[in-house]
Image (cartoon, rainbow, N blue to C red; front, top):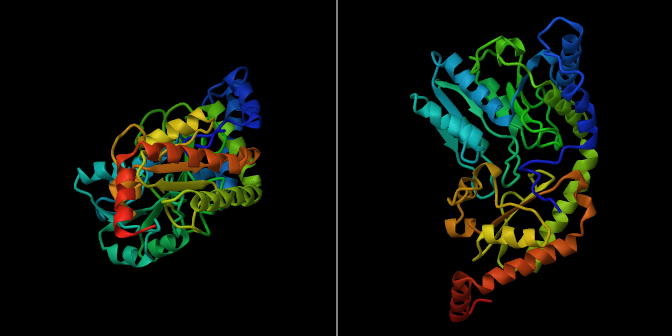
Length: 394
């Protein structure tokens, strides 16, 4: 059972079927004037409309990119370079995706100032901290909608309202929330928004950025002037067609899937916490994505747990796929104030609509058996038991 859908998802058969003609017969460049090019252009604009409809935007406010990382880079750097004469201060959070955080670090090397808001033990910023961080130099607030590791949801509607009251642009990385919870750029006061195809059963290598009408950016890629000159380069027509179909499917079933996944999520949380000693849920219990769970287990290594679960047929992760090869403790989990030793014992489970076909009890039992096996080999766990016995703890 594949349970790492925050990393990527399986392309759906409906999406693949709609893409196939543009991988074979309808191969035209959408910038050309003859019929095969016009067909590609028509498909491109249909996909653009589908993405726009899914977030309550206008069609000409959607620009296609190669994915969430490019969209984040374009939003943040594009605004920073455009508005640097007005100010060079940006506000973000401590738990952003690397595509945002590393972009901000790059801007800091160019003398931009960034305030990283804390998220406390529940993984959510405090609005009071945001208000206090705003200065006359603030040009952009970039705070993600839903966190890719712990699944917590930020109060983006209120964040956007405060940004607009202070004449500041608001960008949100909605890669994990798009197609899973409501995303409405008008209602939620969003100026720029990043989304990606492969998180919603679409193809990899394609994403989009929403840019509110009137917002101006400095392009990162220069060339033939495609995508209204904001993102030059021949469009990935087949990928974009697939993305449009995936968005349409995900958003048309959003409420149904959210309800189903929330029930599975809550059942897993309750049974793991009830069954396994010294197990904890990371992030807020309620303000979270319907499909993401992040546990930590005392005195084990998360990587070893992942391998044991894989041997039992369950594919999970310790956190972000974009930083899975580093041995450093997760910055997201340490931002919650957790001990780095405990952070290494984390497990992320991210569900998909098809996840209802597996047995939750068997899965929880597999986790429990794996944790117990690892703890038997853990000096840290054995020392903890000895310490507990000495001080009379149970």
